[in-house]
Length: 402
Image (cartoon, rainbow, N blue to C red; front, top):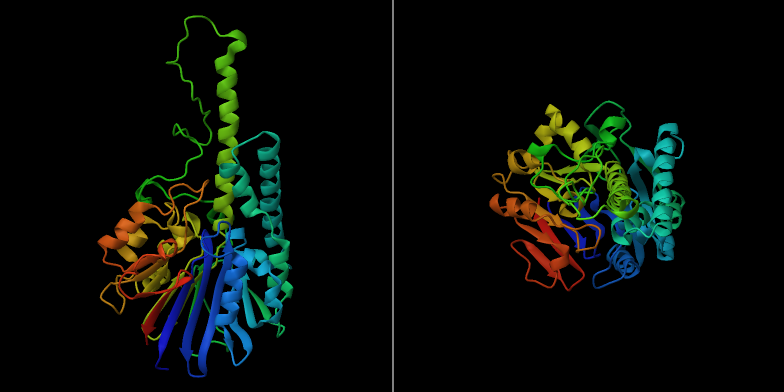
């Protein structure tokens, strides 16, 4: 199957949208992974969706062989709410197992996440909490029924809906589809284990630096945040214990911010982690996975062996501090690949209030130190590095010969 793999990263702003074209024995096959944004860059997400459809149209027919939703955050699915998808033929739709309409455990998780998002949204409005740090996070987590309706019931061609992984115990699950002949596909997440799903942040040795923290003074989740500590001594006793009231109010805000960060991470941990192998190329798309799923993968020999062969990486969670474990990026990924350890990478992001520290510069620094060519979608106006080709301000393209 000689030809080129093409990976197209659309400049959606803060979100993800990747179109992957794979050469097969039956001709080129197209995989769309996510289409969403919560802060546009040059184009609206509707414009991006229309461009994607144009890019998958051949001889007047728009077709996507496999369409993937990594997870249900708005910045990964909002584009599917647009009516333009009704004219697109899709072969299969892949979603994480937590989106299965018939799985009781999946329904429980969805209901719990939705209830938390609604409660945070109400609290942000009624209590006047920081809209960017709490309200926007809750809004990103609320179910987009229009987009989810398209994914579950829309598109032409009556696509089969598949939910992965099926196994409740295996860390790596190999799957097949006749739509991608000659392509090996491995699923590494999301796990079915509640502990892993609810484990958001890497331990100290696995984090390249601290990032978003709901407690500005570094207090742990169970401690009270006190912006006015014991060192603040007044000359006269405060009326009605003003200091205590201020500390309690600040603690309440910190608790809501911590809950917002936890909600964001819990949904991120439901991300599909997909690895595609074609020839000697291993393409890793981990959605927004955080520590829980990665911890399982790093402790599994088969998963580590596959990660060591990776040749392309979609950097998890827009290059946040908690999306990529330090040991994965520093010691494992690409270690035994077909290109002497060099991995090409893409980062999809634009700065947004409430998600400060994205992209996390130590991650970009480590990519540079490992001589990994990478590009950032937000920098589409710049001259692209190495093998990447800028397609106007709309997207970056990467061609990989196979």
